[in-house]
Image (cartoon, rainbow, N blue to C red; front, side):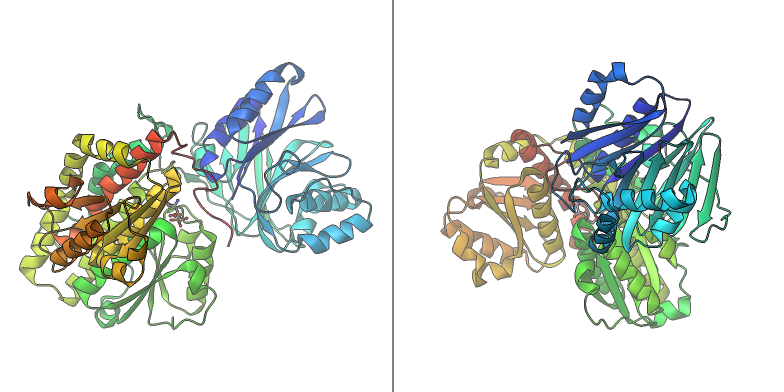
Length: 615
Ligand code: AGP
């Protein structure tokens, strides 16, 4: 996945594109580049590594940049061709007059490359993107019209693309096109933008046109025209972005991840607001557009998601089955899309995605849509491509999440599942009234309990310091918190590169126990009141007997835990069914502080990108 920013206008082209790329850095950061239309020529700058290197490069070359009027920039997360200067975007055609930046994968690039080589094109990189540059230039040579050239080119491309092109001989325009990868146009005063995502433009304009697949945007500084691949003008709605530039500031926190962890109480309040008024009123989830009669008879739900969203979905399964009795399957999108599924028109399919962009989940949703299932999307990006496929849409409203490691969006997904399950349960009448009221009461209290955790993190920091030198971790839990163990372990892996694995505590003795010794700490999630509490205690004892260092995450007041565990991290009391939404917080903090102590790049961990737009 990569980030694209195109700009044409009377502003400071270099600064605008750099700002935009900075706000898209979550999309990739192994190399960066920019092409400028300046003084009648195209000037290209590329650097390896993070965007700061491109900033420094451009700063050092400031004297040779005279008065650019347009430019296209790119931040790369390598797919075809390793991260290197030659593979960094923008790519050019043989004569260097046409430049292109691209996000996505061109599946038929080898065939196209063969044809273009025969025509005399000189390739310099190993990327699929360079093919686009030669292809458009070849079309331009015959049509002498950049719009026509791009249109004729994109119909030959197979795969996914968001593209932005600029040509030396076509001075007053930048052109974008998209298919299966996001691209939007930002509309300003005397300036316009093309970008992969809204953070790139939010500091300049809130007016946006989202391109759909197979659309082309012809953008000059005071005009925007959108056409389809047949050249027909498409009338598009201009939308106003729902957030402020301040969402992209660290607000005094050292990292976005820490800021986002601390935002969680407000994220929950925000999400509950208007949906859960008081414990006696029914959940107001008007977002769910399924006929009540259909909900009453619903007997199959499938949830598809990846990564952290998949873990939220595993919790969702427990909640929905517990509250409604409806059978729920959860599957990684990447598995769902390559097998014969039982999805049909009577299945409710729930797609969960922070970004609404993840390629595997997107494909899974499209497949389910073809089978005429009702599609419910839970996402933090109601403006995303995935959201457009939704029959019902629950926006989790967590605000822009910048850190690659998902935190507040996870909690917001969990809360969405509670609201959804309660809503279904109320329609079906599947919950006892007293229990229902208790759950609602506890939900309203959750933000305060998370605030309690966040108000004193000393113990978590001490734990992080003590354990930051270990190379491996095991997280164990049972029941609804098994997903918490998976998620806690994923957080640690992602940002500290420590090998951490979540296991069902009962599975420990079926294999993983062989790994236990004094070098393998075991973190146990223990929620008193659950029928498995004692069982997990026994599993922890088994680990202790193999000399493993033990950490407990618990709401128990049992002083004896201090004898068994090396560190006991306390969380406020909460019923087991709601406990994942607060148990995840200390685990996010533990991962954060371990990574911090190890001096890792917390917000932009190696090899990762925030949303994965390739399958
Ligand atoms: C979470 O910390 C990761 N960044 C990753 O696992 C992520 O959750 C996954 O790629 C799915 O992304 P999505 O929620 O945007 O679909």
